[in-house]
Amino acid sequence: MMTLAQAGYPAAMGGATLGHYLVVSAILFTLGLIGFLTRRNLIIMFLCTELMFQASGLALIAFGRYHMSFTGQTFVIFVLTVAAAEAAMALALVVLLFRRRESLDAEAWQDMKG
Amino acid sequence: MGQFIQPFLMFGLCVLGGGGVLLALPRGGKSPQVLGALGAGLVLGLALLVLGLKAGEQHPVPYFYIFSFIGLGAALRVITHPRPVYAALYFVLTVISTGGLFLLLSAEFMAFALIIVYAGAILITYLFVIMLATQAPEEGEIEALADYDTSAREPVGATVTGFLLLALLTSFMFKGLPNVPPGQAASTEALLSGMPRLVEQSLAEHGLIKSGEHVALDAGKHAVMTDAGVKIEGAAGERYIAKSEWPKDLEVTNIQRVGFDLLRDHPGTIEIAGVILLMAMLGAVVLSRKQVQMDEEAKRLQALKLGEGGGA
Image 1 (cartoon, each protein chain N blue to C red):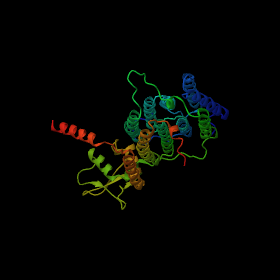
Image 2: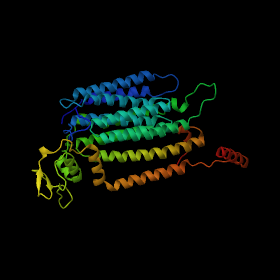
Image 3: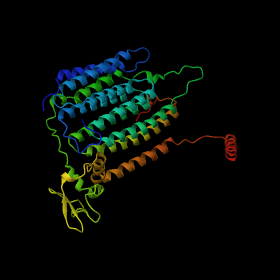
């Protein structure tokens, strides 16, 4: 059992264990994707992208642990940064869109074609 | 590395899970949502059980199953709950259990940073926007759920796509991971030699070096570590402190390692992250600025009100 304040880095993680974490990460990503596709509430759609960020972070850290490298954890810091920036921009946009149509429905903006 | 799981079992679980999620999605009016959620949860538990049975000698700790069950169950509720506030709160649960999984992967700093940044900061912003962007119910009226919250868009297509992707993503489970060899940890000595001040401080605290003595540095400002231990210089000449005599707490913690990796190997990316955050802040300020339209009379009243408040 690993302790919180480790004395030294723990022993190498087996490939079977890596597989477990990757499966959990894949299921989390899939749930986020399905949520993004099916929900019509703009805020919940962005919440689902955050779910996918979580899944990618989990995969990065699991691989980092497997390879005994800390770059995985460093990269998750940048994933967090991008998630925070995305949340700020997306929520500002959502507030703006809500003021225009008084609705959070993504389909209220169906007429917006490029 | 061999198979973890039979392909037909894996695909069967994917199909069953897809069916459960499909049933659990909100459909407007009456829908077998509870049944679907139960089914999806059952498949999830089954998948975890199969993973547990197939793990062989290298079992993940039991906490792995608990955290992943809570996390994935909460994620299912995030995408199926018709009320946005509840979905956001379930997302907090997912974040906390992902933090638990990070702890199991001995990424303590990231686990707590995740909980502080996600559950503490980002989710609060989401909750604020959800509350801002939801009309209050009229007096005497029962709070009605918006139509766009109670019915899913293209549930069948999305679920099929999602679980096809899942089947592809998890196909490594029956192919194995043959080309991904596990890495070796950098030795503690190698890392400590890059932090001579930490070593010196720890040795001084435990009375192993006297004042006037210090850790010898090589040309690259690294501590000199040999098989005999760490080299100490001082007025009384040179000596070595062997690894067996080092204090027990002279270790590189997770935060120190992450910080080392971040600042030594990726210094430029921090600057880029700062620029991204700055641009996001500017963008959010520009986007959410609203010109308040007030006529002269309203302005006069507002000024009067403010004047009264200031004078009191």
